[in-house]
Image (cartoon, rainbow, N blue to C red; front, side, top):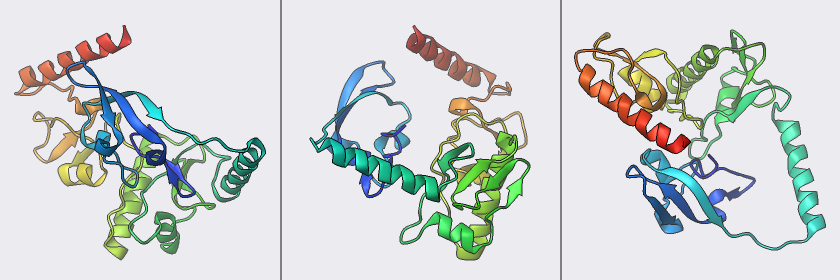
Length: 232
């Protein structure tokens, strides 16, 4: 996950230490991808464009440092996070990528959305780019709050907020444009439902069989074969 998103904080990213990544490809071959081909960018890597690659391991290079200085820096960063982020509540961390030249949290706060809630989900009053599980929130509560924020930011600032987390397993129905705006990886369309609706499942698999049930079934069987191989 850290490599997939090129995770980072306080001026450093995984791209600063990763030298190469060992992957399993769609042919079940183990390959090594060097740093220059990983296409690291802000919260981005080649793995987001190529879902057929699975990270197995990574080669990283670290620098020697003074133990006391490292421990002090860790303590400083943890305190900074505790004071600025809602660590006392469950969350998935930062929700949106920062638009170029701006901060997602700042934009959301300017809209007066801090403390906005849907069901048990709430936009944190401590940091507006966090959606917390305040009171037994459901996944649908969180997803609806995400959509609300994206819409208000788009209406006010003409900015498309892009999600940091990837949504892999949710069964809402959206219009095609809504699914794209949510940054949901959709691989198949439910031809048996409404023409402009998509149902989203893990890996984009559509389980309601339709007129193209033979194609859908092939996708499911292929996925299950790969899954059983990986679990052995």
